[in-house]
Image (cartoon, rainbow, N blue to C red; front, side, top):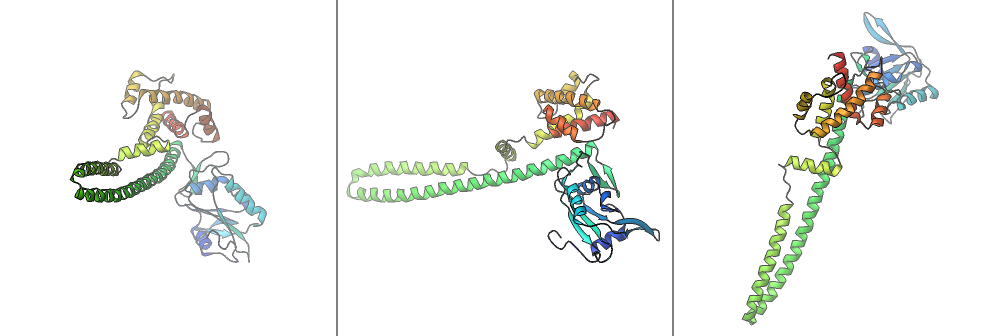
Length: 352
């Protein structure tokens, strides 16, 4: 309904359905605009289905069933702008659609919050929430890490497809130029051969020159054919193609990234109380395919910095907030690796 009618004299079929179902996985009631917090907005945006918030409604029990009861709410421009501002201040901002209904009686707001393609979203102070089992729940480190990885994988696939398309278009354009070059050259060859053999008819001593030129031009045509053959796209060599695309984009391969994330999540459980890595555990990490000891030592150094910082955050061992992101950036730790270290430290600390 984006861009369509925003105000209704009565209640729409959508709102009537939300009132009949009661609060649940994709719906929430608030008695006033002041009751709509960023927690509710990001929780719906981070969920798989999204949902709606009805403002000016409370839950009541009718015949043993929970339903929504319309109370009414102030629906002026000031209240509407306050709702838009709360959604915009989320990180990243959450797009919402706001409707005013029941204007002939007691008006209410209906705020539609779709499941976001840019999830995960956090509140302005960096808290991540999701709507599950009819309520708002915190997003714990392992789940948050999975959401960030899904988002980055989608971005990589999009870039990969675009680069592959550009590469294919480049190959086709180059083939076209070479085929045009061959056509022009063959025309010149035909004209030259025709002239030479005409001369050969009148002077036999020119026959040797004609044959020499024919051999030379034939070799030229064969060389151009080899150029075309060299441009044929080998669809079976997927690894070489992937490496070429990643090199063009300045990206690590997905395998290399995932291995760094994997050992980052394993690293905290392998360190001793002084955050050192034993030779045995170093050998174990080196057994992972595609990982060098240099990369492992780099992750070990990052782990020491990150874990010491986590241990200093007393009483906040599970909360994700903006301070983590600022610390990772300050220490030069990639955000996904920092979150993987956080997840591994959290599991080790809780004995999970």
